[in-house]
Length: 322
Image (cartoon, one colour):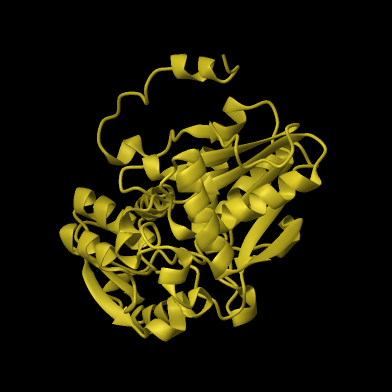
C-alpha cells in the first residue's frame, strides 16, 4: 500500500459557513507516471477542486476581503476586473454571494463555456480584442477604471493575490509532504509563483522556484510571456530560479497525457506546467517536485483538445487555446 494513502484518513474537506469559506483545502496527488526518475516524486496540487473549479477562487476571495477590510469597497460597489476567464468567474461567484455588481473585461476569443459561466453568475462582460490576448483586456480595463464608479482589484498588481498563496496554497502543501525541492507553476499574473515561492524559500532556501512561460506570441490560456511587453507589478523576478519556455504543442501533448496516463482532466496551461515539472524531475537525483494544476478542463471542451488528435487539431502553434 502506498505510504500516502494515510492522507485519506483526514476529515473530508471540513465544514464551512458558506461556499466562499470552503475555498482552498485542495488535494495534493502524486503523478507517478510523469516522473522520469523513480527517486523523484512529482505531486500535483489539484485546484479544480475549488468551488468554481480553479485556483483563482483563492485570489478572488483574498482581494475582495482585503478591499472590504481596508474600506476600499462598500455595499453595492461595482467591481471591475480584466481576466482571461478564471479570475472573472471566481469574482463573479464571490460578488454574487457578497452582493457586488461585477463587470469583467476579457478577450473576445475565449471559449463559450467561460462566457456562459460569467453570465450564469450575473457578470457584465466587455470584450477586448482577442488578438491582443489578456494584455488587451488589461489595457482596456485600466482605461475604464478611471471612472470612479468602479473598483478594480487588479490581480496583476494586488498584493492580496500572492498573499492568498503564501497564507494558503503553500501552507497546505507543506502540511502534506516533508519537503518541496522544486515548485513549478505557470507564469500568469505571477501570484502563484510569488506567494508560494516566498513561503517555500522561507521553509527551505534551496527550494527551486520554476516558471513555465509560453513562447513569445503564443497564446496558451492563463499564461503570459514577459517578452510580450507587460510584466505584472507583483512579480519579483529575483525569486525565480528558472524560467523555462514551453510551446503550445507541448501544452496540448501534456494536457492529453495528464488525462490518458493520470486520469486528470485539466486545463491546457496545466499541460504546459506538467511538461516543465517532468523536465525538472529528470534533472534531479532525488526529492519532491510539486506543480500546480490551475483548473479542470470543463471550460475548454469546445476547443476540441480532449477529443481530437493532434492532426485533427491542425496548426497547434498558431491557435489561441483559450
